[in-house]
Length: 423
Image (tube, rainbow, N blue to C red; front, side):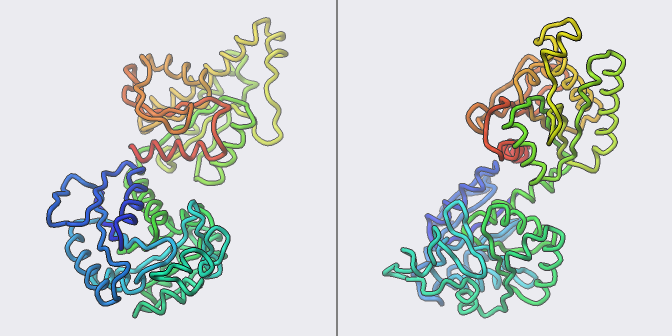
């Protein structure tokens, strides 16, 4: 993947570049392109140092930068200040002129993680109107309006269209069609965004709307847009999630990922685990079910965790009924779930990664694969690690393993992002 970020200062180039670094891309931040050989970089982040220049001078620098760096790139970003300082509209014009006909600027000025949001065209900085923030009172280049569309429209010679938050939350397919219509009418499309989820939705809809896109933002839109490109390019590289823990933390994490991602969810019938014949039938049912849709889906969740109002297995009562220990019951649950997971992995041969929640599940899967262990590569969050399976029947399979009581509600999503970005 090759990309170009053109920022109006070096700090901005670095800030956007580091977001793409998180996706596994090699990023070079430069300010003298003639002196640097960047053939080994996936992304070039270049500063034109044009924020404080006269509009005509900033146009010339940005135009020249895009002409110089646009060859063989597959995505382009005009990085803007998160508080809208500088010659934003003029530099959008320069980028579009250099890239040529057919390109549309998609503008998402929001940066929720930094307290910058846009709703009803209005930018708020940490809950304060932009014009009343430190940026609004900046001595060198104060921002005098809170209206994002008004600010950009006053600076660009191209027609602008604005898409409000109530259109964004209606979903990807709806927004995709809105964007396609907008692209026929304007070269600059501006979006509200309050949450990272809003920006992700915009990115997915933009990608679905077609190619020839210039992202214009302080970083998050471009990060999500590139991430969605990565997912699309690696669509055959699928991930199996295996969850056996029954903690409230795990239940919230499952609910969160089912809400945020398209996940093929399969729940095993635990009652069938305690009779050998029924257990075999249940494993076969699950494996057939997942194998039957493996070409249509990317993320699969296999679990014994009770969802909603379902009751958990009473380990003590089950152990007493079967005449075994509670540890034996727990091991049986983990081993049956692991057996189904490994059968899916080996039969499909299309899973590039596996997410395991619960140490007993991880051990059971590694044993069934005859693996020696895990080659640890990185930490996703504290007590959740990313690595590769060592040896066994599926060597080098990517794996994230974590405890059932670890992480916030978005932990599964973060673990998936880690595996996808390193596939």
